[in-house]
Image 1 (cartoon, rainbow, N blue to C red):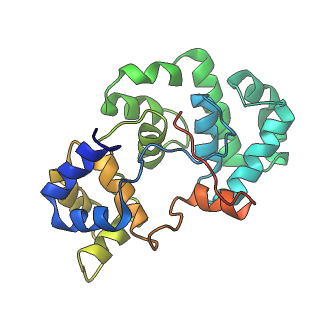
Image 2 (image 1 turned 135 degrees about the horizontal axis):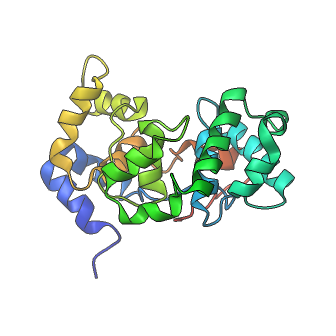
Length: 232
């Protein structure tokens, strides 16, 4: 019986010798795993709240702020609960002014149905990105992270991600960080499994066996020696 993700990684290995070497070294990482420590449950809305809370801060800090919001609401955050808190209370719980406005806009759009996260599964990747990026604070990177971690789309490569680009620089012996355009061009032959290539490139930034996902590393730091990821 084929192993997990064997088809996807065999295709990548046959396409690119460097990726074949990385598969030998790192195995077949799951690109869809979501290291939230069980915080968001099956809620796509709560997952996006955590994505927004985590922008430009450490994963440990993001978990801390998210946990304060969840404690205040006595459970997994829902749109109505976020709206009930308002800007001032969200700020006291640790969100910046901008992020408070972002999660409030997400909640308003979820309630209004203009950005209904639960209806995104039936859309193609471009359509999902179009909807998500109407929400304040949700840019291409956050939308692509949501596509990969929450919707389990197989062909996502966040070309602007510095980790992806640094991994490319190291593995292909480049003298400088590739541009976003160069990264996209390099990854084009890896379609339709670029999410798997992304997972492998992120893994390559650390020694084999070491956690590479920032949220996984944060969970370890917070005291869980073997943090489990979820597949929402």
